[in-house]
Image (cartoon, rainbow, N blue to C red; front, side, top):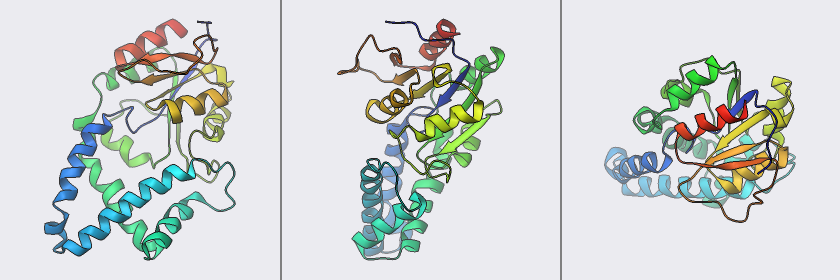
Amino acid sequence: MKRVRQIRAVLLDIDGTLYHQQALRGLMAFELSTAPFSLGSIREALGVWRILKCFREGRESLRAMEDPRVSLVSLQYSLVAERVCVTSREVEIIVREWMYRRPLKYLKICRRRGMVEFFQLAAEMGLRTGVFSDYPVREKLQELGIPVPLTVELCGTDPEINAFKPNPKGFLYACHLWNLDPGEVLYVGDRHDVDACGAKAAGMPYVIFSRRTSRGFNASATTELRSITNFRGLCDVIHSAT
């Protein structure tokens, strides 16, 4: 494995990286199962379930768009609206309620062990830290309790980016804000097909939270480091790359 240049900043994904996404999905699946009672209507609950399913599927399909001519903020809702025959506003209301607001209360209990200590270590070492996610970040960061100020907080739907991972635009925009070469910024994510591929396309070193060894990756690539299972492993990477 070739040695990457010295790391001066760490850019992190949020969902599945700062917290255990499967645990959160389990809690939300239970809450969604009670929707017929909380909404007072099985028909209305079925509508919510369908919209959320279509929204997730639509989001994945939009990853292939290299340079959309319209804002992803509106496109992500209008595509679902056309498919389920409701208005874009109705889709937005349901998504904001069930995907953005309701999960917030579970974030702290699903937080990865060692996350707080990692951010404290990075600050002590003089490393800049930030986040880049395909979903809104501000409220999640507040609920997770990040112990240090972040100097970059980016979402794929930000007008300066308007692209979902693995498009490298968001990765490169973070480097631009920090005035750093991509090789000096370590990206931390949880998906090889999205986070690793996006960081690699931007020329950034990266690590991926995973419980199994990645396949199909060039072990001698200058941008690849390794898979990790916890924040202790990330701290080891930081020590070896700074």
